[in-house]
Image (cartoon, rainbow, N blue to C red; front, top):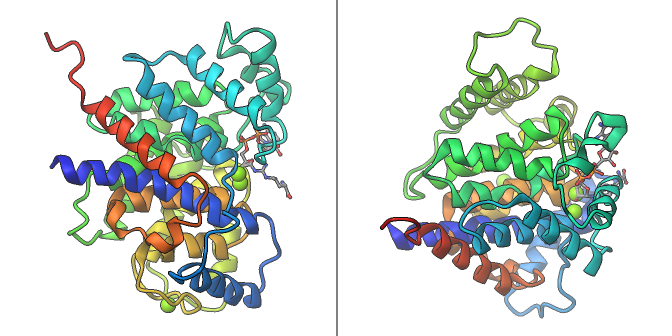
Length: 356
Ligand code: F2R
Ligand code: MG
Ligand code: MG
Ligand code: MG
């Protein structure tokens, strides 16, 4: 259904923006039980229809790069990664103070100095040739999941290469693929149907295991980086069958993480979405599934803008635009531009290319 899909594109893009904007004020703040109550009040206050959206909650690097990802897909019929590199560079040098990762800036400088002639070279030299495993690939990948949702292999191929412009470490790349898979899977579910969280989680587990083992047999060296995300998804599944108690959040943070590394944040974002489908987080009081998702992500602390952005993209892709709270939305910088971008992405994806 065309209308539903258009709404889901908007939902994923806005869901991502709102997680970023609303999560940014709490990035790496100390979180105590008191802070969790403050965050509840922060959302209650922002949800008041009479509160003027001044000043806006500003978006950060997460959304700046997401915008470039969408333009990259919209403007050319086939992916052109040098063009993507140019968009990143242009965006970064026009607004460098958006809270970018500490090391990714080196990539932008090298890309600019080489006029983006080889999109893939600068990133390979990061961290003495290891490449970055920051969550910067994952935080911006949602447009790829939307655009290629009906061509799974192409989606993975484009997601990997688009990540490689800044991130080449296996964990950075597989983290972006994990997020991409989660968004695509959420997009394909009718929001009228309630999600079976464990089943959803297990589907992702099977897909990421297939990628990590390159379609081969189960590996036994499960400690290796090549098995990181299948292990994380098993942990997510286990947490989903536990009741919430006083230790719950601390254990989630220890086992799944809340950091700037992809392996300490992407599975956490997926977990936030799935956990928030049920209303059993005692300090979160709202009937709104989307709000519950990002409020929970923010309440876990650490890299709040990015984890809320990723969880928000997944949740928005599932629920669509209409389920997102308009009062919260209007506080987010440039939300109208994001709606337009989502529509352009939708129109470009459904435009008949090379059909005749
Ligand atoms: N940068 C921020 N927020 C400020 C960070 C706060 C600070 N850490 C604190 O504790 O207060 N937010 C934005 O950055 C994240 C996305 O980063 P991205 O794009 O992946 O950048 P980068 O620089 O490539 O990686 C980020 C950090 O990850 C660590 N790292 C990555 N690869 C590594 C490797 N191979 N070896 C060692 N460390 C590695 C480094 O610390 C990088 O600086 C998002 O949160 C976004 O919102
Ligand atoms: Mg950010
Ligand atoms: Mg509750
Ligand atoms: Mg962040």
